Image (cartoon, rainbow, N blue to C red; front, side, top):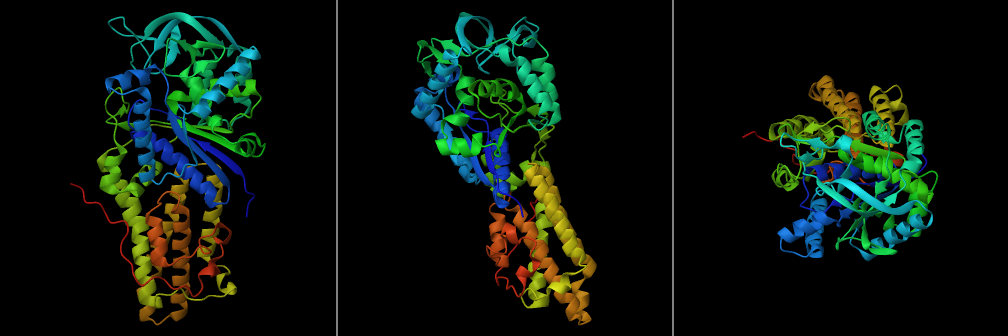
Length: 515
């Protein structure tokens, strides 16, 4: 049905300064769902996530915890891994920037850029945010009512004056601006592209300070060991440092591969300006898509560790299950805008879309097939499918979903799949199999049950990347086999001819009662 592609997908390399929160979960679930959808339609996918473990902030928080930095980041790394396991996140590579393999890679790249005169030694003076690990120009500094210098997130800035290595960003400023303008698929959504151009590239672009001194927890520069590589450069290079030569050639450098970075909107400057410039200096391929989503907002505030209002995803997983959280964050979260989470909204979406729509369809369909077709999908001939409204609807829906998968539009995919489920529920109400049974209309019942089973099959097939646990139970209760849920056979509706469902069944997604 389509040519296979190699797809590289990454989340940001999360900063190991604290336990994972709902924002981390959203980005990682989004990446995992995109991965699983591409795999569903036959693409080869390499999914990378992991931990950014260096910098002064790590030293500070580990000191507060009375731990050595390495011990501290070891524990935080395990917290992230446990959460990803509980959410059925299927990453292929988990990177940790404290590993020796990464250190050697960063040092070699840094040496190469020095040798090719893309990095030089000078002096840096200005305001620095220890929380964001970022230098701030005068135009970006917020001065509060007490004349304290703050970053855009309200963190206190410190004034620094020290020797530093600089990356020649200014040399490539015109190139990156032109690249963004001529590669419309590079930054999504469009509002982020406008922000990068208007906020970062229309002002004077200064070279970037890419080293720190007197920092023992980081990667030292081989040519000048008293300097440590700036944590953001350290982190960005982890997208490449853990790849084998074959993975690098197949998933990054191949002209037909697709490279997708996913992240929250506050870090687009690093990924949309600095990162492509570094890749340009190295003569490496530029990522195909930077997908920068909005924030998850709690009580009309961005969630952040510094504000102390983060939500632990395990609270939702423990109370409602991992499927529910995966579904909610894809269904209710917007790439373009910020998204709200609260308990009432969570329950409403679960009840309306999972319990009342898809869950209800599964329960009704199983009961109908048992009651009106002796637990078996009737056998139809190819001619019986001609001019079938249901088949035409399914074919059109499948084509739409495939296109949305290729465009990585996960929320739209859910909308389309739920539309199939909604169609199937209405199909039951309109056809009224109980009335057909009273009339002994065997032919109509056979066609109806056949169509209903295929509506469930297609719907379930395309919900697998999101509902990783529930769809397995649906597959068990319907007794679907691998051939029936193979992408190459998804519009072969006759594959369900004479198919026997399981005798055992029970509701999978029950309505949540509001307290």
